[in-house]
Figure (tube, rainbow, N blue to C red):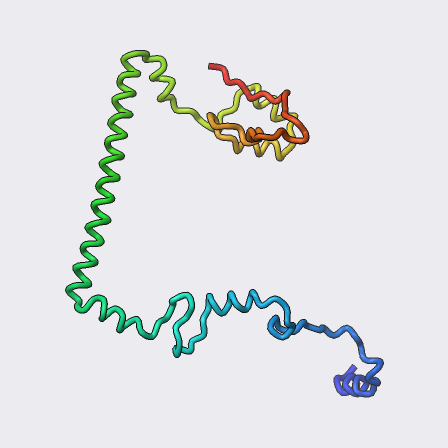
Length: 188
């Protein structure tokens, strides 16, 4: 069909028979008279570019230059304050590093004492453990579990409290405690 024929058939349709499947969009939020929260948040986060008044979040203040000049009259004073602040931060960092070094030395002395007292416990404390290694019992148990339970088992970190256990609370749960739950014992 030619485009002129299509145009002529469309123009001849009465207004009542025109297709009613045209999209109707809602009016913008401000025109509906609903909750203006989004508009308020937008205005606060993205203030207008008009620079005739200060913004509530302090992104722009017309008197900031005068305030800085009044508080810090010279560049030398500003540089002195900056250097003092950096010196203060360096003192805090050095104190933290000294405290960490002291704790490490205490831990090292404790490990030396453990080595002298019981070498087996020292070796057990320093043993590298592969968190991905599974025992035969765990592998057999994983064959019967659902996929979500297998993922939970693989996500578990050895030596930490099991995630699937409930945290003890003042009131018991409605379903009760899992009395049959047992952790996987690892052969030593």
